[in-house]
Length: 255
Image (cartoon, rainbow, N blue to C red):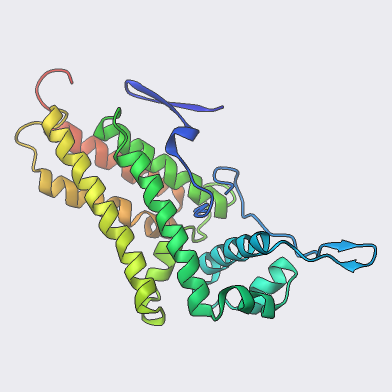
């Protein structure tokens, strides 16, 4: 297993507590490339075999996530999902009702998983703030590579970012769910910066509020930066931000 050594702490990919629904897959993170679902129907010698309901629902959710990220809310419909999975649109209606209900369902699960993954970064008890920034970059890269072949392409890779661009088309409940991710992420980063100040990682003169604002902006806009400029630009932005903050506000003497 590949290991990343961050300062005093050695972490493996499993330490990031990556979930399966947002894989963000948001499933298969770090494997590279988009995961395409089989469109073949389950058959036996006598004809089509019915899938277990829980399996069908899970596959519909995963297919919906991929298609919403690639096509957006308006560009995704039940026909595309059905073709991806080799099922009927009636099957999707049976499990989820209409499109707004399906989107709310997948966003709710995706956001919950995304919050858990961000907590594994920003609330990790044994890492410094600089190490947390490195972990955040690693998490973004895993997500990016799920939807991009190599590091120089510009496909969307974040469901949260993609749906924010179409808020006017979403239901109030879906918007509230997306906003809950932003609120949680902001709080986690704020806590991490305050902890860095209290531990002495940042000097007494460090403007903790301004540093918090800077890091929130970086993490929250990561998908947009990579979409416009590719992965390397985002990685360089993480590194440059850390270098500037810790060269300017590192306390005197070793930490």
